[in-house]
Length: 601
Image (cartoon, rainbow, N blue to C red):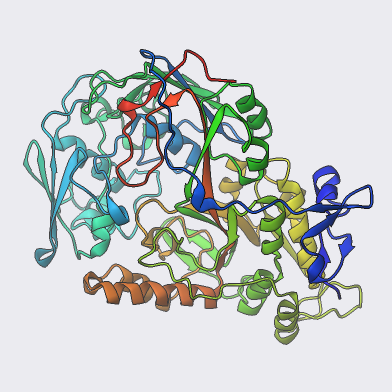
């Protein structure tokens, strides 16, 4: 069978019918037929290293003003504005403007002492001391004390806690398990030294603690404001949904559920009152964001898709910033279920997808390289590991990954016993019975349908009948609801992880991690994860090897496999001043400025 090629114009106009219509040699891969019988070049790849990290605006700033931000979202945001309970990317983006983080980071995403809190680690005795500044106030004017740092631990560890942060890392705190089970009234490993100092005792201390791991929590919450709300009721409380009290540069002012949030400058912000008066975040579908930016409705857009780059790159009213994302997209396979009572993931040896050759064949069948060529301008690349390259100390660029190889996919399936018994081009299962796989994928922009349909054709090309769960792409919130619930209609699913600044994979792949959506566990996996965050990993060479061993093992098991690494593009209106996207020592929010009353058109 000849390798199939895409018609670019057909993809844009009719999505599905001509996705694999043009066959040809590899030499023709850089050309796509158009409707006139000529040819159309594949979009030129962008040199992502040339994106600036900061705006260059030397115009005189106005006083105050309102920053207009587009929250690019396909679904309404949930509005759970408490870090201990939120697991939604949209809510997290919103909370950044009123952040309750107590730690800043420096090179290699290590915790620094420039934030509200500093960290001193006594690894020999498995202890750490958190010390907070004495000049910090909440947005309601009340002083921040160490009780507010302890309070989130009491929320997460509580027996009525409804979130996903009570995991293996959290249980590393001495006394956390006893508190959670109700055997103790306090977490014995948390010792208040004075109003500004907390000593934490851990079962073990590893290098992960310096990135905020090992159970260390990086946020404070206002105990004076929330202490009377039962933990089980926090998620629906107006105190976090309508009127949160926060520590960030801006404070919540008006919330229209699922649609918009208005912030005003926090006069009590410890770094100083912001120069901008207000920030308004408005939810905007990806299908509308390009025209909205062009019309000057917004100053910047969050999470704009790489597929939109061609449409905004030449707009004169924007500066396009870019940086490698702390994330990756992936394909996951359902291999078991979460035991909600024990909080443990349980792999089912009889699960349909519990067959390594089948999973690897699916990985080799996907022509991700061609998708990056046609749609992503070099802003995405096929991933080879579950550690993003931005973590240069632990990412292994020598790993081969799953490059497009349909012949290898076919051989894996043949050897594993998935054969086309009746000659219709579709393989039956090992018992000769009809074999159908259900794929859950999220709604996106107007290109997403074409891309997913192309992948379905990829699978068909190697003889696999893969259909969409629900028969269509799934709305963002519903997608994750189904994945978290281990919906029986999902065999495989396409998602994405934002890793945060801690490269340790335990929070996503451990046996007691609720985020382990594939539900894959094994003693070998437990050992590999333990090595990464072990006391021995203080030795850099030991930890680097532990990371590599884990990456190799996950590729061999293929319970999930990575799809893309991405360059994050951030369009910024040219009236914005003193703004950057540096991971290390960025311009702080209180110093952002505007040079005109309205965004430029």
